[in-house]
Length: 534
View (cartoon, rainbow, N blue to C red):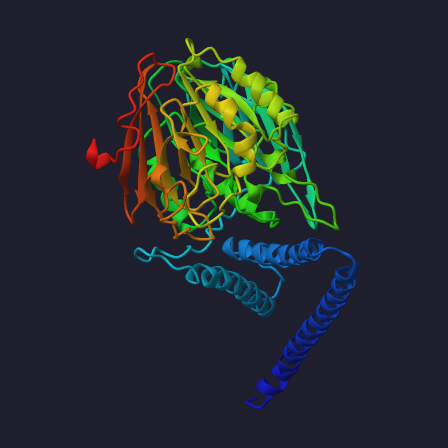
């Protein structure tokens, strides 16, 4: 009897060994096939390189990189949800190790680029790891919910469902669970290389009362969300962040923003840093949902939203335009890449410009801007604010001169309209200038503020040029992550504060009072003074 046990179990052991060997052989075969395909693609790239510009070869390389990164992100997302990728424990371990190795390689390259920078001041923190936000709810449950203003009393609700047949409908009301109104909209998908998006829904609700809390549900499924409509009069508080990304520093910035109330958020470009890796758009939407579903987020595009690739001919801004629809048509614009809207009942007019679409005189954007600014009555609208991505004034070593052409084409229009303040991103640091026009201090020109320090994965721009030709116009500089707040107090006065990210709290590092350029009495003495001098 004692010898019968191992005899009866030996076939099972043998079977397991056969399965393991079979799995390893299949894995090796797949690796060989993959290796042959990579070699074939490299050969194709070499052939292309002979007759195609270097930019096209780099474009092909970006496609290959995006494909590998997309597969890596999908594997990590499934692992975060506790789901099997291959259906076997050994397979999951092997694929997981490969995916994490790829992410470590990418992060290592990024960190190496960061540490190659030299700073005259103290060493700033390196870029943080990505924060990948997984979705673990049924396919018809809304995710990536965000809202934006449309006209004077309406809001657009945008969200994504994995179920592409889910309805595009929003139910809403002033009491929890009691929906007294509903609205329907549209949805669409897009393809990018091997990726196909979920259904991206857009529904406009209203008319809505100002400064009022509404509860709403998307697609007749999932969680209930709560939003508050913006105020229809002054005062109003606007949060401004640029170059956000989705790192641990991003999470810190979002936490600091959510720690104090505000009415609306403005973002001058570079949202997700997906950079062709489309699942990162989904992860970003889930990361910002707690804030973006509760207050309107008004955004414009940056260079990381372009995602155009030569040779394979992917059109630019496909993901951005599909996911972040702004009220461009209501402002007379023909493009989602530039638009304008009113805030605080028309007391403030906000213009969102596109740094990566034609802006020269004679272009559609230039003509639109001229019409838009001409239609602003400064007696009714004492505050005029402009956002764009690439800064027109910049003493940082990063991205020198990239906004010069746009400044040459449009600065005169902003000056004649008496724009109060211009916010930009792109440079991963904070910098505030005095009021400027045509490279000289001018009390009738806008104040220029660079705030591209939301938390991006590329790290901070550490080097400011001390002998830069615009250095005498630059009032405050710091290479730290953070966010800003513009509180428009009344028709003549507003206060701007920049909040640096510390580990557990946000620290006010810069503060300045502005007086509207529509005011008959201009006070400029405070325009170039730091907080500790006020």
